Picture 1 (cartoon, helix red, strand yellow):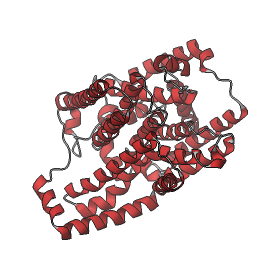
Picture 2: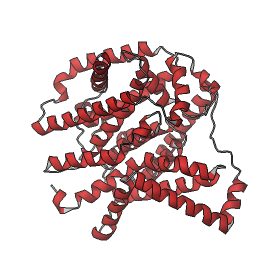
Picture 3: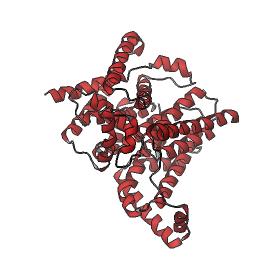
Picture 4: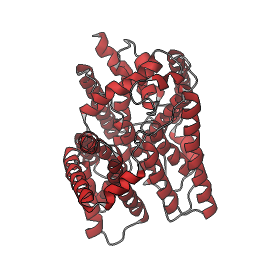
Amino acid sequence: MIEIVSIFAQFLIFLLIFSFPFTPKILNDTFKVQQLNFSLIDAHSINIIFFIYFCLFFSFLNIDLTILFRIYFLLSLIFIALNFRKLDLNFKKLDLLFFFIFSVLIISIFFSIAQNLKLEWDGHHWIEKVLVFFKNNEIKDLKNVLIHNHYPHLGSYIWAFFWKNSYLEFEYFGRFFYVYFYIVAIFLIFSSLKLDNKIIKLFAILFLISITYEPYLFAGYQEYLIFSSLIFASRFISMINFKAPINLRFIFLILLILYTICWFKDEGVVYFLIFSIILIKFLNISNFSKVNLIFCLIGLLLIQYVLQKYLIGIYDFPQKTSIFEVLKDITNMKILFTKLSQIFIHCVIAFIKYPLWLVIFASCLVQFFFINKIETCLKYFLVCLLFNLAFIISIFFTFNSFDFMLRVSLDRLLFQTSGFYIPLILLSLRDIKVFKK
């Protein structure tokens, strides 16, 4: 019984601490983005990003996790007490229905994880880093982890943070954050879909969860962290009017959201560069501002390099394949055709396994065949999609264990970025008559 109560209590803790430190009014006053009015779920989402950066900052300072949690929780309570009237909690009946469904979904997945405590393959690797933080060891001890010690540590730190501060100190409470992050992301992205019929929106949310929920990945994998972060970023990117000047503070907020993925997995650096550079290219801002933003990207990556190289003591990428070996493969037509064929077959399998991709491709077809003019926002996501798929295909030419990596990682690589392209679906729905407001 106490375990059940603790699970419900963990859900309430998430609701409380992610109500700090921003409200919709604070965000609207700060960014003042034309035609964009921040909602309660926008504020909740940005508060999650703020918390992620809080964890990133303090992960390098070796401060006791219990002390950090108590400080953050206390600040959240004080903030809510002082700003309660500004939170605009006058919900309509349908809003309450959405919150009820939101709560039921999260708590149901919590119970599902509690009933299946097994960590899958990657979970056993990541938990070695989790234990470094759970035991309040110094961050430089990460370099002594036996398996993949060069992997980014932020996901492991958050896992340890909530594990350490759960009432029963059960390991799986640390992974509850991944679930909460994921469900908030799904509800967030659909908040931008304007529908008269809210029930259709609710069914759309449930449908998206049904094709993206994978219990296996909640057993210690980091894919949902990247998946959810990219949904957060894509929600705000899809709100940009690419034809008009934009508040650079808002663009920097998007870049910071994208930057989080660099600290979850190695490939996050490549995704960060692809999505950020293409975004900067499409923005209606001066060349001087674009150059400044590019320098911001470089600065953020240099910060990561310095922190990992000199505070942790290791910075590396797992692939050591020589460029000459890669060139040898791609210049040999037989090897090139064989590998591309295998990649294509496994991509098809991955698309069936994670059917969100099939919906994304169907949305692209709708845009090409039924929409006369492709707007800039749509072009941005399509260009990102092309570069994203090109990277995933090309990276497999650097793997020594080509067949093995295809079987165990291609589907997850495809899944973790699929959430970024949900706006392609929403743009198609918007242009279908039955969904127009």
